[in-house]
Image (cartoon, rainbow, N blue to C red; front, top):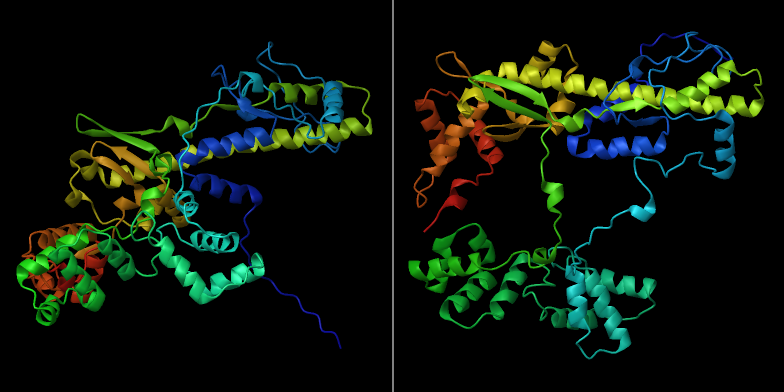
Length: 497
């Protein structure tokens, strides 16, 4: 028997507009311009405010008979304040729709015509794999072996290592190119490619990469000693078990120092030198600027976060023309429905951009007020303990909203450019009951390690005792965690001769 029951559940669901607003808030300034350009291309009812006048675009309203004729907009008509605005006729719009299935004229005033477009010369660079293929063409190989060697080169990663199994390369050749080969033949060609420049390429491990480079270095005692160390005691060398190495290879301190100096000169990533780096991707565009005006920090928003956008007056004119028209056939209603959707979308996007600006400024101002001492002095020790919940309470925003702002936005100060999450840290209580930022403890810990005797580096236990003397009661495991967050190795790996 079918049993029915009623249940009440409270669900929190975000509207598509709210989701889009969150995504827009998370976009950094560097990508905002591209996002706006995409919206301009997708929505012909949205355009830049070229004359700088807003014309009350924020309060545009649709007529009573707009859209599908069911009166889903206010009855008040829109009054245009710019009599010289471009006029677009509804019938002309319908004719354009017949001529162009996209319904959108891309040859507008904002992007210009294709004939006048200036093309900047692009720098042509040879990639790492192209360099190797050029060298491969110099070998006297038949077509089949040449294709095998090409497959090997194509299997190298950006650092120049062959981390793909040789058996997998043989399978790729058999199934992808119908080329039959053996593991032995592939290994022979790998040895040929290992003779290419740069030295060390096509190695399987770091150990092999370094030894390949040493074998192409002019012979000398330091080179021979280094090959012996890396060939027989590579693990011990990486873990700095120097006593064991010296004992088995009969090396004195000077010999071992020469070995270390030789290894330091080698390249652990021979293919990385040919990787084309895009400097623009690494360039940080700050979202905020903070200037010190006679001891008073002043906040401003990057102007790229505040583009002047408006709703197209031409498309609004078409809505007015439809409202006043006595002839309202089906095609016109469909066109007007499309126009109404685009007008609504443009209005929402403008509002979302303004909401983004408000949220960014509101959040950054709260951070500035909370960490005012730091923005005046630039001293890290002046940073107060601050978590996301503190800023959420000051701004009446959700913690997730503050997190989105803090994780993707940057502020430029007189003391450097920082991501906003730089200003957040947990609190640590001293033996006097005073709360200090964990960042302050990390700074002191970093100073201890920087000034230590490198021949006898400080252990985590010793660092803990030193912090306790300074008044910071902290567990050894916490010291180890902070040390790892600072990117500092354990004492044994920091040891130098």
